[in-house]
Image (cartoon, rainbow over all chains, first blue to last red; front, side, top):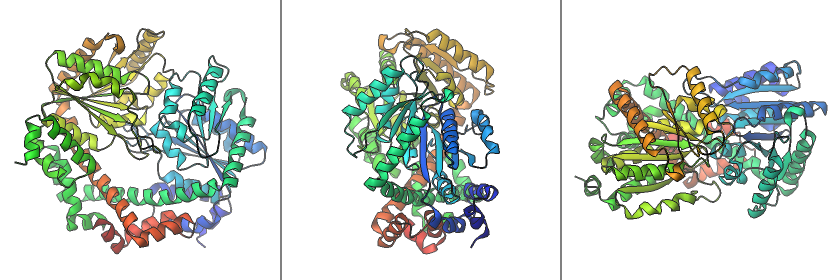
Length: 319
Length: 319
């Protein structure tokens, strides 16, 4: 038994941190750790919390974690922060607020920076969720910022997806229609003490009734005031109802199987990308080609196809 | 001279459509067409219009196109629509409204569906912009939906980026801070007849003053009512001012060179992904591996690394 994997399975926090770092760095050791941990996954439950900036997702996650701790459950939090392409830093802002948990060994918090321009959820989050699960966390909360397409990635990570909005996000219904409706298992209207909360709830319910949600689960719409700790019990109960529904219908096993498949495919793609990027910085011939492309002495599309179709080119990228 | 490329350069609309379709389908003929067209690019100017759903981007693009036509300029419009991962269809909604242009040969409109979960701007848009440029369009308008990270892709496509918001999008300032400020050359506050427009404009100006925008251009903040055709002249004048600034400072050439470089890199990556996906559906051994991964008889991360490190595996993917 790999010593690190063993320590993760015993719930040691430093080992847990170290395993997540191996994944983030793409370390050659990560594969064997993941293989050791994998048979011990499947007990934890993953909840995705998503929504546009400013709706109070962090506060909601914070309150939910407190509620779970009061029930004796252990919690892992993965906070996916958009990275600025210029500064390279994650927007940790109110993450600092969550330091109140730092003294509680039952809550493990990790920020994950998104890289590049895709705006999607990093593939690595799927692997990280499995590490937290193997480490014995009863519930893993994954918090992501997103609107429309950006939110879709959370569907590939979480067992239950909570889409959060506020009465103030004026275009909520239009956003709903733009794909969010297809991923949400639960809707939370936070800051529910503000004007328009009930109207928004009615509008969401109405939009849901018009939609043909044929998978058998009727998404619930909840009102919360996370800051004042209002509606958190009800939220957790609704997540529990969705979990029971998924377990009984066989949907949970199906979701998790699909997630593993996607994790494999995405890992292949990201690792290929990493290797190509490395080759491009190491290989003088390719660097010259890039310069020619920039200076319009070569055409980007055709040169890309040429690199892929040329055996030597590809073999060079791969090895 | 390739006949299709020749006809695109003469501005034939059917040839233009056909060339864009070759790119979309990843046709083996696309490379040679792109190489023929490339030397004739660089005359057109590309403007990206982005912002969250519901701010009136389509109306703004529509009005801008009318304004440009009245000055005798030809216009290409690429409308990037988020695709639902379930229905597969683009949200063409108000695209229909733009049919008024269909009788005008000087306006060419194409919808581009985004695929997959990345939420990013499809790589193919960069190549498409170059086709429209080669076909003689004076101005190419690229319309994308996005908030935060999703919007960043537009920076890699457009010479000038216009970020659109409304007084009603309550979290505009927070969204600004989450990366948008780094990509916007111009800000448009649309629906400026509604409550809060001037306050929002003041807040945006204030946020810009606090930021250290060291590249020398001071992003302008404009008020428009696209529906009533108010502020469109001023918007075009401001785009012109930014164009002059970029041209004089050398920034335009720099942006375009970087864009070509990125187009090459993204094309390599997407084409690799397409080939891997194809191999996974054609190869019985890999299909069996995927089933084992789903059923937890194999671990996704370690198997991905194994496929990449195994010479036979990679050679198989590539050829």
